Structures are given as C-alpha cells and as structure tokens.
Image (tube, rainbow, N blue to C red; front, top):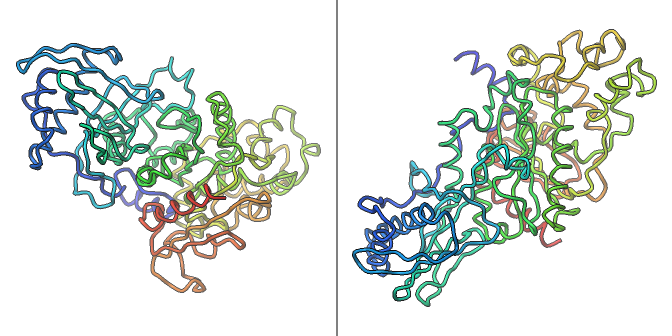
Length: 524
C-alpha cells in the first residue's frame, strides 16, 4: 500500500483511477418480473402507457425494455413485421431504428448507485437501453477503430399503439429530444451515463478488456498492442472528431463522464463524435506521441472511407496532464531540432544504421497534423513537474518495467554508438527513457518541447487546476501536481483556472468550459 501511495505521489500526473468518476444517474426502479414473452411485455406496456402514477410509468419503462429485448431475440433484428399472439389478443409489431445503428443485443444499463445529480438523466417517454455490437477479430479487420468492448451506444425504445398494430422504434437520444407517440409530441427519455456504467461493469468482470492505468505504467511493454485510437461507435459521416487523450497512470475511462455529459447537449451530440487515444503511460512521451500520429492517420483513412468531409481541418484534441504533451506534439514542427537536442547531431552525422535511424525518426521528426485546428490543454505540465524528480520520482522510475528494446535497437546501442549525445548521457545517469523522466523540468523532452513552435492559426485553450485557491503569482499555486507556472501558456485563446486538484477534467466547470469551446468551434 505504501508503495502505491508513493507511486501516486511521484506520478501524480495521473487522471482519476477506475471507479473515481462522478456518480451516474439513477435508472428506472421497475423490473421485468412476470414478463416472459413478447406478448406479455407489449400487453404490460399498453396497460400502463397512459397512466400518470410513478409506479405505472416505471412498469411501462420496464415492459418496453423487455419488449425490445424479446423482439430482438425472436426476430434476430428483422425489420419485417411480426405477428404476436397473447392472452390480450393478436397484434402486429413492426420495428425501425437509425440506419447507421449496429447491434447484436439490447442491454439494460447497470443500476446507478446514487440519485441523478449531474443532469445525465432526461425524464420522458420511452425506455433507455444500450445497443451493443460485439467485438470479434473478424469485425475488427473491417472496423479498425472498434474497441475490445465492441460498439456500445445509448438508445431509447418506444412503443406506439395503433389498434392491433404496434410500432417499436429505437431512437438515438443524443440526436432526438422529442418523439411523436399517440399523435402527441413528447420529450424522449434518455440515460446519458448508461454507457459509462456499462463499461465500468464490464471492466470489472472481464480483465482482458481495456487497460489498467497502474499496470500499464509499470509494465508498459505488456500493453503495447493496445495502443491506438478507438471509438465506441462507427465513424460518423458528418460529425467532427474530438480526440480525448488521457494522462499518466490513467486510461480512456477517465474521460467517460465528460464525454457522456457533453453528449447530453444536442448541439454537441449532432456535430461531434468522441474518440479516445489509449497508450501505456510508462513509455516516453515521444514514443506515445509517435503512436498517436499513427492513430490519427488511421482515423483519417477511416473517415475518408466513411465519406466524412467534416473532419478536414476541423478536428479537436483535448489532452489531460501528460496527454496534453502527447497532443501538443501533434501540432508542432520538429525540423532537425529534436535530433540535435537529444542525439547531439543531425541524423546524417550519427553512427547509426538506416534501420536504426528509421526507428527513431517517428519520435524525433514530425510536422503538425493539418486536420487538427483546436487543442485544449487540461492540467498539462508544459514545463514539467518537480514531483518527477528527487526521491518520489526515483521510486516511480524504478517501478516502471520497460526494457530498452521496446524503443528499438537504436536506443539500446546509443550509449556505445553516440556516447557523447545528451540522451546517452542522460541514460547513463537514469537508465532507459521513461515517462517519469520525461516529466522532470530538467528532461530533454520538456525543454525542447517548449521551444518547438505550435502551428500557425491553431486555436489553443488552457484549463488549469488551482487546488488551494492561491493567487496565480504565488509560486505554490498548483493543482497539487502541476504548478500553475508549468501549465500556463502565453498567447492562448482562453485560460480557465478552476478550484480543483489534478483531476480537473472531471469537474463540472471544466466540462462546461469544454462545452463552450466546442460550441465556439462550430461558430467559427
């Protein structure tokens, strides 16, 4: 336990740990007890559809959920009308849903542990569900941005009764706020935190899904296959990508509350799709940044394949903590400056083979991504953090198990091939490069990153934590991990300082600021 606490302090550039997200909204208290057949479910929904009592509304929600699940089990998702016989008579049920929706199963979200407190539950007609399209290696070939959990999106099922005909419809509550039922326009129910709760449950029961933030920090080489950009739904044809990049000792789940809350805004849900860059955070920032560039190239290809033109020169990067450094590297021009700063010479002057130079080139040589036009830095240590130095930092570095060969043979032969290079000298003092070393104010990466220019015309925003509410010019002003002086950038389009610790990306005021920035992005 002591070692874990020390690591948290040394590597405090972490986002929230699993389970630290804010409370999700409460689901319906109704159950599907006594509903065994599709006929039973529709009959129960019909009997309670027009009642105004809370018990009957809950019963109608549960019956509608059950009807949708039983319909799928009976028909396999066919759009052909199905005739159903029950004790209350015979009826014909037809089903419809958005053409872009992919699903194998409809799932009732896990129950919430507290009352709705943050606006992620919308009261109305219909029954919130999750549409799940399961992962398989075969599907992954054609959907390379799919996560190991598959695609999982919120839907709301409604039943509309017209005599002996019943219409079952699955709606996307992020895009639809109202629906016509029984000839009347009504608010469509929604549970925007359902995906968050489902993912947390799945990660607890299936350890092969996702990636543990702590394990991936300590044993990054065991998680390299999971590096990349993914989404929880297929790439949209007309929405702008927002790529969320987590911080040290964290994972994409740290963003789930923010993305759920932002998706509850119809203006954002209609125009944006959220993607996540996942990486094991023990590897050097330059390595993660190179993999992020690869991920963005794959995203570009998939968006082009989907016929999406909205992304061009419009994408938004949002990085928390070390994820801000990874994001910033996507928007800088290196020239040969990084080579000289780390290797002490230009590539042509190094005694390395072509293969070894090619290994280093993605990390040391890069240009700004032309399709990213806005970036938001949240608690980003642009100038490093002193917690990565000294006793606590040394503990964190020793806990990281990162073979030098993970970074290629060029790094492993560097001490003998170029012993006078700054990187080789740094390695002789501190061992193989790692993320902890990168975050020291004295690291080569931090110093050179501050010198590299960001691309012209880029819209830049900062959100910075101030844990104790100190004056910004107080040297002790920080989020508890990153000093204000490290997170602050001159010349940004906006800077918001929130009364928060390092996990400021979870705070309501931060989410409100992200909403403001994304809506501003649409108006430009």
